[in-house]
Image (cartoon, each protein chain N blue to C red):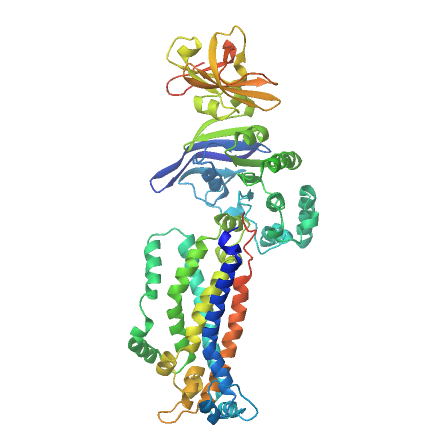
Length: 331
Length: 279
């Protein structure tokens, strides 16, 4: 069954056209990540799905129901906000139960669901605390708990990890992945972080300027990007883009080579001067100058090279991506 | 840490200035209080002396409690002040919420219009107000005062509160919408508790002028049964003779309720419940 269908969804604020003809289908139980640079409309799209903004035109269906005019609370969704948005004057338990009380659920159901959610999220000892007495990670878990207790058809996450520090971010990412496995609910997750997108998603939707650039599984998008934008956005460090003649091809197209596909070889055909070396222990990232264009080379393991040295590079033919002047993939 | 703040010399100077200001501000209150406990002669002989065995007298308080219906005046003032504050805060906060939360045509214009009253003193309209009160039959009722004070307090209340309402996180309000709270519930349960410190400020700003006002009670409600405390105290001030004992005692007692209200509101000012709402 389909959990969410968007059909030709448009959204304008006055003259500003923020979402342009969005068409997306999300299957039951799928974890879908909307990713794109700031201002691409991904958060607006989430708010349209949630019902916090009305779509200017087009259809929003959750399950089989057309919900364009349904208020947020009746859409069977739950949302986790970037700023957590916990009610500051209510304790953790009341934060989690407010929606259920609004739905007039019986007390036994409410208690059961709170117990279930707090066990899942390790919040059992904190139910009587106020949000101000919790750490950032705990607040985030309460916000997720508040979503879980509602048993929604669709979870919406709006950049939930961007207020957490790096170590906590990784832990919470794993928790969210586990949660998805346990609940097998449909989830939509908005982020600008391509690592989060790659690690969490069953399906990634790449957005730019209010348009869907490409939809697919993380590896599909990584191995087979439809255009230069998607190729450059996914993968870290980002893909190198070089004019065709610099890498020994004829034509005026652009060649994209991922940093790990640029190999340092004694007799490689490309000569580059090393500018900067990042040694991470497990990997070594080399930033080098290839006839005027800066390229990043990712070497696995430790690699002794110093700025100023010249390295010879090879880029296997099979690992090259080619884009035309408009950024479309041509090979 | 700010360097100026940790400098002991600066701290001392700052405290000295604050203490000096406190003394200056409290001095008239102090003089009223000590003199209210003295005989009439002692008040004029040595106005700054503390009451002693010789000069101590409760004659002023006795006069006040016997003459004139002091407790009724007291009650009237209290009803007028509390009711006016209630309406100012309720309508002010509602208008502020609407202005800051909803996008509608003429939003900015409406905000400006509502704030216009800050610049125009309401007393300019006294004659018109009196005519209106007469026409509606509200003269010599407490409602006349409550309505006028509410109108007088609203502009500043809307102005201050809409600034604070804008500071209430959108995510929080949206979380409420997703949890199924109605717009009214969002206003009362989420927005109001978060702007409580601002509401307390507005309440304190409005309370004192309303409590002390003589102008409107004199014009709109001079009848015996609706007299406010300030107006009621005037019976002791005559054109030729003033009963200072009674005036000072009445004023001393008039301080108490304002003080209590102030303590209630300032506790709200201090309570920092907003921390932890959003990071």
